[in-house]
Image (cartoon, rainbow, N blue to C red):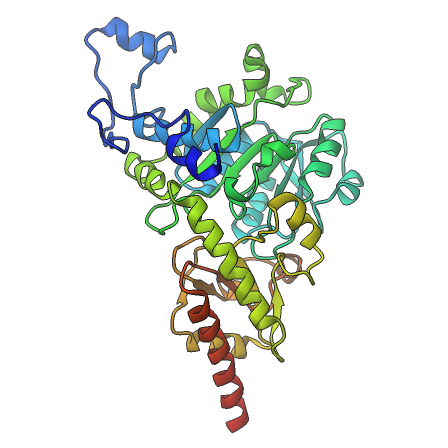
Length: 415
C-alpha cells in the first residue's frame, strides 16, 4: 500500500465492534475483571488485556500500533511528550559512566536534557555534524548510544542515516534517531538503519497543535549485548526486543510518562491526514524558500534548496522533499522582530508541524538556556527566525513574507 492508503487501511487499523470509523476513547484509569485470577493474569502478562491506563490503554494501544506499522518497527511505546520519550528511551539503556554521542545542533530541550543527565554520571560527546567521520573519532568503550535528529531543528542539517548506522553497528552501538521533523511520510528511518526511532508526535503527526505527546519505536533489529548494556540483562530472554521489554516493564512504566487516551485519539485523527499535510507543507516550504532566497538582506536556509549542502541527501533519503521548516536570518535581532511582527498570517508560537504557519525567534525562547556555542552549533543567532510552514495557500504565504520584508526595508529607509 502507498502511505496514504496504509494510514487508513493498514493491518494495524482495527474497526471497533460497533462499526465506528475511529477507535473509541477509553477515558478511564482502570479496567475491571470478573475474577481476581483474571486480573492477576493480565498483571503478570499471562493473558491479554488492560489493567491500568498508566501501563496500557486501548486507545493508546491503537495509536502505538498505527505508528509502529508506518515506521516498519516491531513495537512502539507512547509517552506524554516528545521529551518524555527521549528521556525514557535513553534511561532505558544507560547508567552512570556511560557516554552518548550526539549532534551539537539538537533541539534546545534535548540539549538541556543531556546537561541534566550529567548529574547521573552520563556524559554526552557532541559532534558538529552527525556523520560517520566525526562520530568515529569520538567512539570509546563507554559509548552506549549514538543520537541524532534526521532533520535538525532548527539547524536543518540532514543526517546520512545509512552511513551513521553502519558505523554504529560495526561498533556494537545502537542508533537512536529523532525523526520528528521528517515523519514516517518523508522517511522510514528503520529502513536506513535506525534502531530506535522517536517522534514528538505533538508536531506533524498530530498536525493541529491540540495535544502533547511522544512515541518510541523499536525496530527489533539491534542485537543487544547485555555486557555492553547491562541495564537490559534481566530482559535478555526477549532477544532483539529486550529494549521494549524493559521499557514497558520497567523504565517507562515506573517513570509514569504515559500518554492520555484523549490525546492518543486526537493523534490518530491527525495521523490520518499526515501524508496529505506533509506534502502540502513541503511544497509550501520549498516555494517560500525559493521566493525569499534572492532577496537582499535576508539569508535563507532550507535543505530542499539546490544551494543547500544537504540537497543530495534530501534527494536520496526524502525523495526531494526537504521538510516543513525554513530558517531566515534578518541581519539583526531588531530586524527579525520587526519582520515577525509585520506578518499577517504566521502566528508567533513555539511549535512546529501545525496546519498554520508559525514563526519564532529561537535565541530568545527555545534556546534561552543555551550557551552561545550551543546556539551557534544549532544555527541559532540573534537574527534567526524559524518558520514552521503550514498548509495555507502558497501564493498567500509568499506574498505575506515578501511584503513584510518590503515594509521592513521601507521603515529602515524612513529612519
